Amino acid sequence: MNLQSVKTIYLAEMARSLRTVLQSIVSPVVSTSLYFVVFGAAIGSRISEVDGVSYGAFIVPGLIMLMLLTQSVSTASFGIFFPRFSGTIYEILSAPISYFEVVLGYVGAAATKSVILGLIVLVTARLFVPFSIQHPLVMLLFLMLTALTFSLLGFIIGIWADGFEKLQLVPLLIVTPLTFLGGTFYSIDMLPPFWQAVTLLNPVVYLVSGFRWSFYGSGDVSIWASLAIIVLFLGVALAVISWIFRTGYRLKP
Image 1 (cartoon, rainbow, N blue to C red):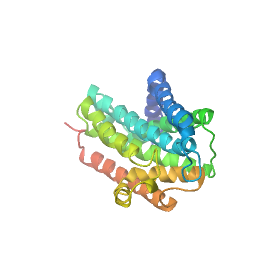
Image 2 (tube, rainbow, N blue to C red; image 1 turned 90 degrees about the horizontal axis):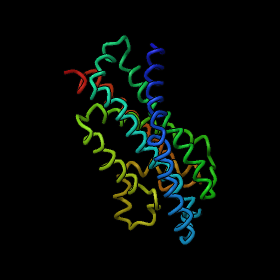
Image 3 (cartoon, rainbow, N blue to C red; image 1 turned 135 degrees about the vertical axis):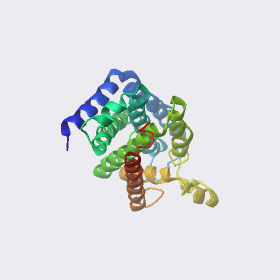
Image 4 (cartoon, one colour; image 1 turned 60 degrees about the vertical axis):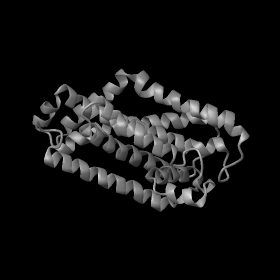
């Protein structure tokens, strides 16, 4: 493996995030903290417990997952879209570096940034809402698997998009709504039976539920079902990226 090339792409992407620290790090942390202030500290104190924990503590895993999904997708999609937009992608493709190493550099940087953001938000949430983590290793596993999987999804979107509008289309119209409807702010047990069945078709439910299980030992679905879904996502994303590089889709003129 050409580790020097992977390291170069990885460090360049991490440096891009550090150059725009207000937009890349401060903005998502402040935005998510506002949810903790409004729903956790202010409104949460007037709502009864959900699944045996206070409402403020209940929404912590969901809000971290919301930030993780959106940041993973947006960082990875812009990271590969900009070289295509500026034409410098051909310099990368003609360099002595394999497709796997290109993906590893871009997706590794996006996933790293998302995990760091997730941990910062986790610490910040503790300032506003008291909560515990029963299974910290499972929590870290979900954090890393989700960041990696949705960074791969972002990479695919960055290859597919032919303009800045399409770059924002999937995150704004699909990822964010599915996360809001995926049990971020409520347990699906609160829904009528019909809507419970419909909600179980939303894959984000399994991610939020598994992540919440690592905090409190309970979730809307089985922890094994959550792990199976995230591994399935990961496999599908890898298969699509393999197909993109094998066929040259949107990469070759």
